[in-house]
Image (cartoon, rainbow, N blue to C red; front, side, top):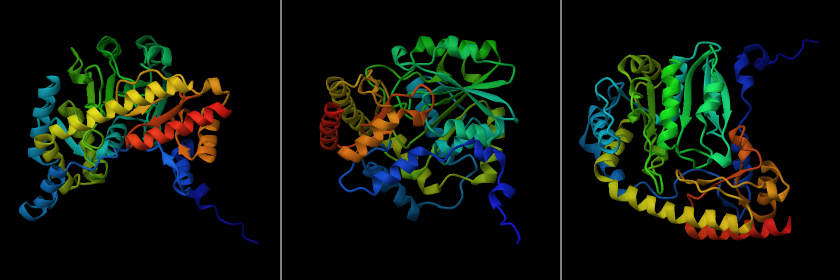
Length: 392
């Protein structure tokens, strides 16, 4: 009898097995199949894309040439983005050869890691972190090196810990602040220390700043605007979170022209260019949507204050997040792990949150709560969480 052929074992690259199937998406699938679930799990704005953005984009279908753009993106968009970053952070990028428009930050990550990583190159990644960072490094042949962040340090990575993780194989330090899942932000002092370490050890810094406009009670630190940091910083950003444009899929890479040439090579063979209609939407976002950003920011801030204070009243210790739209409370006092807490809360009280363990080391015994839901839903969800904690 002929043995059954295993297509996976024969044909699939070994590095694919180094990345587990995302528990995040499996959990979302379970929650989606259950009636009456309030999901505080998905990190997606509940606001619609501001109407003027959508109107401008759809009018462009009839009024403008909707074909491929230049590989780097619409020059008008790159010029507007250059002016936007200069205005907000006093950092200057040449729109002609230092800005690349991508299909969200997801594609930006793919371009950067694919171009940077030789097999075995190490990228330092503070944890907890967004679930895609470490897999993308592995898919590119690199090795993610986790540096744990702690609640007592407001989930900021300590420069000393980053320094201790450097080896002769280290190529870059990856940071994502404001942070998903913790809501942490970097202080200027800490960021400058990290920049100094990168310079002294001849490393790049890759900075994902997708939540840069969602910062509360402090100022966002744009890493490339730090003294002496621009030339070795790869700045990633996009429009999904700040402008409620997740489905439009527009992101960007800003960096030294020599580095960008390599990233553009990956981009041009993978996607040609970001969707043209979406690029027009991004252009409108930069030019006419500031009032909507401020309105959404104010509402997120209202939710943030309510969520954090209520969680602490319930007995779930939660540090004050200063960015993004996530709270990251500890569930250690309940005697449950983050996985157990999230699973039981879903089954018993119909509230979906995400176990902190899904985001790497440092997330153990925590859960992520996304407050990008209506205030009314958040109120109901927190009542259910309080009820659940009391009966444990």
